[in-house]
Image (cartoon, rainbow, N blue to C red):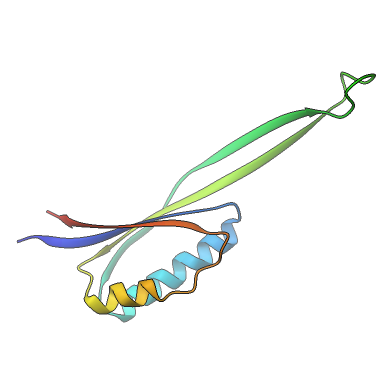
Length: 106
């Protein structure tokens, strides 16, 4: 028997927005009768840049910047049609990047 599952990957620069959105997705999925595995925190990606403060005189004076990308992974097991409709109607923040994949699991 094939069990369907929906895998959701979420990315955001602000971890508070990410945690709030995952809680909203979990609550929506459970309310429609599906089981949820996760959210599983994935490793945070840190991008760092070093920039010269002044282009001419002060070559040794530099400024450093960092941006962190936080990620979460969650599976919704045995989704019902109401689950899919509810997930598509969710109003998630614009700063959140997410990808939804539907597949048949074993």
